[in-house]
Amino acid sequence: MTTIGGLGEAELLRQILPYLATSGYEVVAGADDAAVWRSIDEESPVDYVVASCDTAVEGVHFDFEWMGAEDVGHRALALALGDLAAKGATPRYALVSLAVPRSWPLDRVVGMYRGMHRLAARLDLKIVGGDTAAIKGPAVLTLTVFGDVPQIPIARAQVQPGWVVAVTGPLGAGAVALRERRSLIFDPKLDDGKLLNEAGLCCGDVSDGLVREMEKFGAASGAGSVIRAADVPVAPGATVEDALTSGEEVELVCVGPEDKVLNAGLRPFGVMTAGPEVRVVTADGSPLELKLTGYDHFA
Image 1 (cartoon, rainbow, N blue to C red):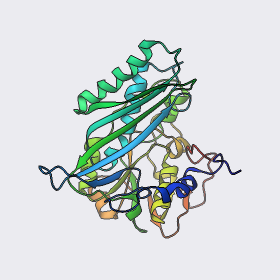
Image 2: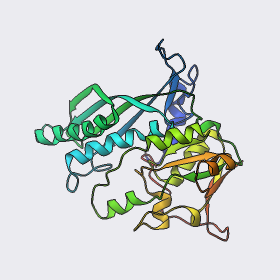
Image 3: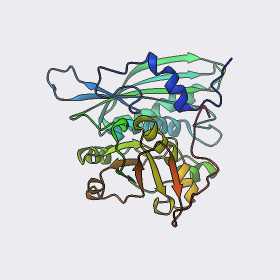
């Protein structure tokens, strides 16, 4: 019997893709982390719906030994909205599914929803429902988010060799916070995402680490990349390896023609290549060995 442990997320997606809708939409499963389709709202005939789903698991994405319930809720929603930010979408609605042990204190559950509501209220996002269930544990929090955008965003599957790679800000803050056992609270970069999409760039959130995100670009488009480690911006207290591999980052990685990336005010640190391989190199062009390349649930 084949198990999914060690399979890798990309191979798991390849196995289940035949059972997903891969046609009839502007951006379909396998082409990006978010799906896009034309709105049926007669008052907004040119708008497109952007939808994404994100799961946070206790012990993997959050830990109540050193994180407050409100922070857990806020972070979960902020990270779920990262895919909408990457596509330049305005968030509109969210559904929340929460599975928790019966032994949990009520204040913890209410606190998580309070944290989500705190962020949602500032973004004019409506949490319109969801589901709850009892499990033995650990807890699982899943958010499905919906937004809209006036134009079809560029999907990862559309990126081309020769395009350059940049990021909206320094990376590695997530790894630093994890080592220090403290909550890193941030808001999704929705305004930046809108401007970058208007500039004609393809963006993604750095949810599993920069190198892993570039592997996702490669899996979707067939275009790999070369990353110059010395040019990747590094957050205070972080190492270069943190910047390359730390997940749950608020920054967006952007890919596009060099002139468009430069005009958007971003500094390129890499280039897309004809093969699907992702290579990280030092200043002199030699390969940089990494202990990890990022987070893969099924590696």
